[in-house]
Image (cartoon, rainbow, N blue to C red; front, side):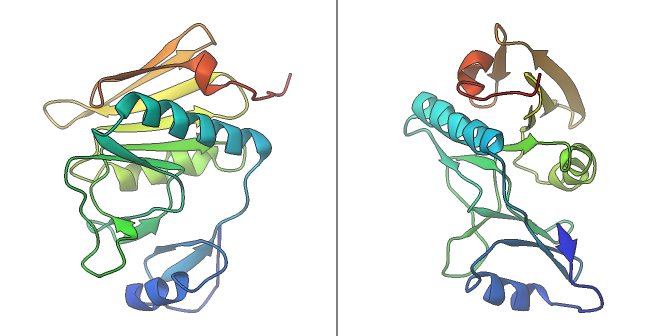
Length: 191
């Protein structure tokens, strides 16, 4: 992501421009950040996540790809997670567009060398203020490792990792188990 320096943009201006734009941008604190494209591995991992979760959840929840914007009112961030899951009644920004989700239960990001630091650090700091969020999942695109932050009953966050094709990612908030062999299907990883 990169910002346009020196130009303050209101959230309303950002949303109006974003809805007409040919490419996606994120917004935070008056700045608009263009999003870069994704690699083959990234796209396959996102596709496998959407398929795996969608098939397991059926009609109980909705799984959205990265075109669903998420807004975090507590800190003002507008962002496009790689995959968002919402269960129950969906809540959107108070407008007629239904393109800015407010209450995801699970957010998933596929991380690369260039995005890993941001996804592990500042994005998690922003995401954890979403009251409905139960799991924040980080899928590594360079090796078979998935990390997950989970909200505990007392509001704290617990981090755990699963590694290797023989393991399974458990998402208790969704009552879903996703085998990493399925998640990394067809993904060619660096040796």
